Image 1: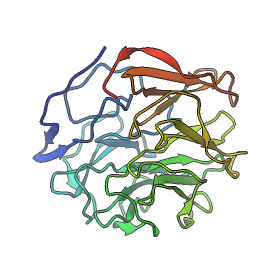
Image 2: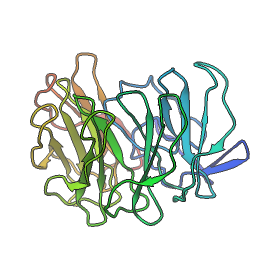
Image 3: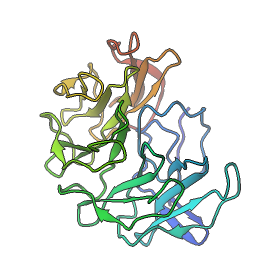
Length: 299
């Protein structure tokens, strides 16, 4: 069915207020928070990433931790005191200033250390990371050069060899990426990923094929969906190519999940306000055309 939320889109907990004016039902994901809960299905395997008001990660010891930007433009967090247990109060995470509508994207290093990336108010990317699994945190530090919209949502994925890789659209409307040089290691500079033009607030949704190859999907400025994929696990990339027919809003966020047999499936809302999906015909294989998925939604 269709769900309608009323303003204001704010949420107060522990004396801290959060907002999410960016919410749109064009993101078919249960991660959007900060409003009355809608019915949700079980969370699929984490083969892709999509934005939400709160970001959640699991510590190496099994405890969950939640992250968000408050109305005062500071990053906050709270975590379980034990796996499946009670929660700490909200506390400020480092000294940094971000747009209150920003998403703190979570990463998990191969050794279990959590890490966050987000665009700061000066349009540079910043990161903060645990100093050890389950441990304390570094301060916020600039995460390479490059200029990004303050409301850009960065996405991340893990290569087959354990190296993390981050993706975002720059202020010049081009896709960029940077990756670890080794698992848990240093990071490359930002580099352009293929030749394509996207809205600078677009989200590059990540997918992981059954063989470990990373893949991205995003709506281009001509309102068609485009994709780019690794040619081999840990390897180079194809160019951007049109990912089937269909017309979608330029700021639509596509979501993805993996079927039990390993086939990937992608979901989005079209310009006609209908839900659409397309899936692989076999693990690592070709893709079906876009097909209607029933229901009427705000694009």
